[in-house]
Length: 216
Image (cartoon, rainbow, N blue to C red; front, side):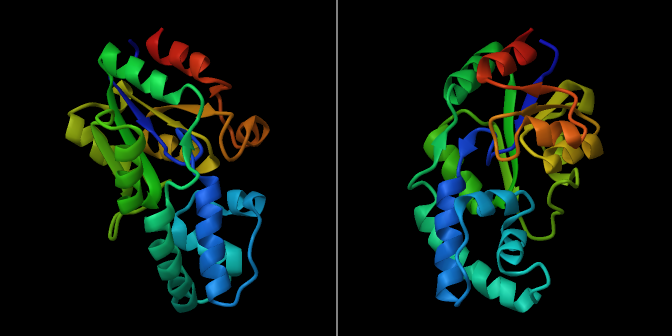
């Protein structure tokens, strides 16, 4: 086994969350008098946390105060509806169990609000992840390496013993900033062509290929 721990992004990597995110965003937008957005538009806005999702959906130049007002409505709705349509990508539950059996320490590091990360990991992957970390106050979100570094410190591992797995340019930068190897998945919110343009060197197209990379 090349690594001791696999650190996964959540949205677009192990869970397809986009429909619930789009529904929650549109609830908050409509409540505050803004134009609703399509699922495709929502998908293009995600990756840098919920506040940035709201700003991109309204207008990147919108005030912090106004964005936080819409964000509060999004969070309240999403807390109740975060698992209405969300589901794991094909083969992910089996892959995670195989990695766990092989002795991997498994973690999630996400820019999604921490409460939602905990709810979704417990609902879809009970007992699988040794540590799950979402967005928290006073902790820099990805692509800053803070949360990845915290996982490594908790596990007592070096960056060479870890691999970071994600689906976006934010994940590429996160791994680079943390000094870990990375694997990018083509089934997520960005796609292989986009990932290649952003400098991804190791892209997998299904969970069997990912399993081979991790257990070779």
